[in-house]
Length: 455
Image 1 (tube, rainbow, N blue to C red):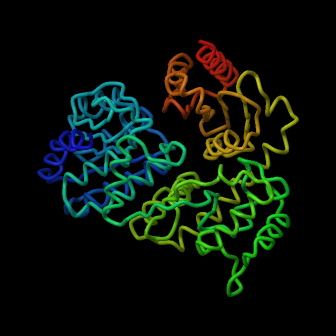
Image 2: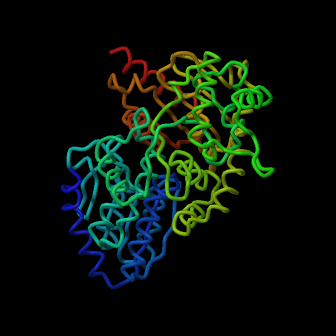
Image 3: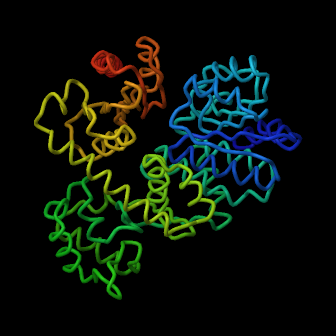
């Protein structure tokens, strides 16, 4: 399976190796895009290429036109470009006459008259089987054995794009995991899969656990501290709070036994934990890389990956936590305001200008996982953005997706109708459209989702 993609990468490798001019590398600002950019950055650097890079929130037609007018004669897009391949073909290839390589996993509009690496062309679902970081890693692997250790970035990207199912890598990502394990770049072990496993104090990880709800611990700091102590586990070591990752195997077993004794569903929190060589769990490290984009610092994410700057990663994590707390606080404060937070077949969060548009996606993800809404197939969040636009982000329930719901297709069709741009995967999709179209957009998403889930 992976070998098919490696074979498809050969023309791209030849193009890059033989190109002698300046290259423009363009990535997207989420965890997958930042990871893909870091892989491509390292690959090009090791090739000795002259290149500049930028990371965008989205690739709009105006961006494509700007890139077409700039000096570089070869453009390498990663985690971006497939969904805008008509613009790429028209403005960069046909009008500007430039060379293009796209390494992406989103649903492609067209194949185009350029090198277009996308799993969909080979019969793989880019929403589940492999991320853009995975595709870009395979390009780098084909280019040189020297790039083999970059496979961990591919798994960070896949994790950021929610491509693990019940904690496990699937499809082509599973093949990439085997490569990482063989090279001792990642360790798999059983443990409690709690948020902040390697960066948050243990009692904080417990109090942040909402799915499942732990009575007396969830959102109860003193209750979480008392629970840890009752299990015979020390909260501090050398004056510092301990993380779950700091515990010995025996201590973690004590914690699990304590949960069972208190009637908590410990088994629901037990999963395979994937730990990187930097001692961070992959889920958490992926969240930190994603946070760099949300905070408007995507190049900081590239720096953290390439330099393994864990001190900088810690600063980003703390800053991100404050921003998320503020956004979730808005949701909690307005839970009884039916013009802001309401259910109408789907869960709807109107962030207005109170929630930063970069955080509306995180808010929808968290509210989907913590049971804030009752049994809804989709949660849709909207927030005001720049240039009189609305940013929208949606997340789908796993059962709805398994029954055939594809959010990306629904959002893309609606955007074509209301002069917006958007799309995504079956489980998650986003859009940007004129502010005056907000109510129309919400209603069309609601109708589209309910029509799909009722069939």
